[in-house]
Length: 213
Image (cartoon, rainbow, N blue to C red; front, top):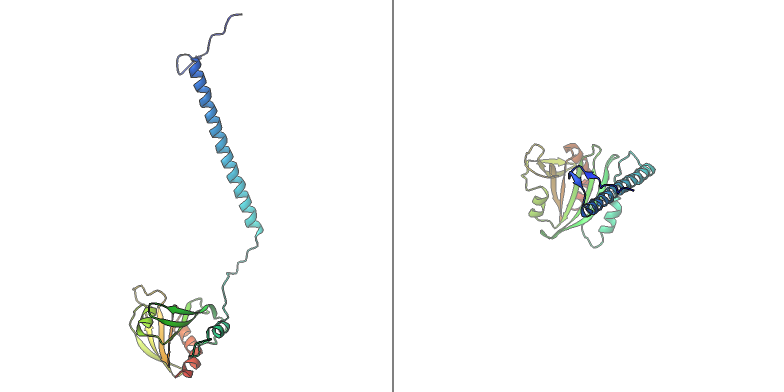
C-alpha cells in the first residue's frame, strides 16, 4: 500500500512538520477550553438572573411609600428624665407626621437640644428645636448664619422670622425659620414648609413656650 503524503497546509504552502502539528493541536485545545469557559460564564449569569427575577416576582410589594411615624410624646417622656425645662410636644392636626424625635448634643457649642422633625400635609419638612441653655452660635448654625427678616406674633408669642425662600445662597433646610426664647429654652422652627404651616407648628408649641416664661 502506498504511503499517504502529508497534507499541504494552505498558509504554509507545504506539509506541516511534526512540531507544527503538535503546536496547532495544542493551540486548538486552548481555544476550545476558552470557548467552553465563556459558555459556562454566560450560563451562570443567565441562571443568576433567572433566580433574581423569580425572587422579584415572588416578594410582595406595595405602592404605598414607607414612612416612619414617630410617637413624639413617648420619646419626649423618656428624654425628659434629668432635664429641668419641660420639653415641648406639639399637638398637631391630622396630616402631620413625625419622622424623628430625639435629644441632640452639639459638642461644638456644648448645647443639648430636644428635636422633633415633621412632614407637613404638603409633604414639606418642618423641624422643631428646643435648645437648653443655648447660645447665639448654636442658633446661627441652625439657621445657616442667615439674617433675620422680620418679627411676627403668634398666639401672643413673639417670633423672629428668617425668610430665606428667595435667596440663591445655600441654606440647606433653613428656607424659613422662626426663633423665640422663653426661660432657659430657645425654640427654633425651620424647614421647607410654608409660613402658614410654620404658624400651625408655632401655635402647637405656644403652651410650652408660655409655661417657661
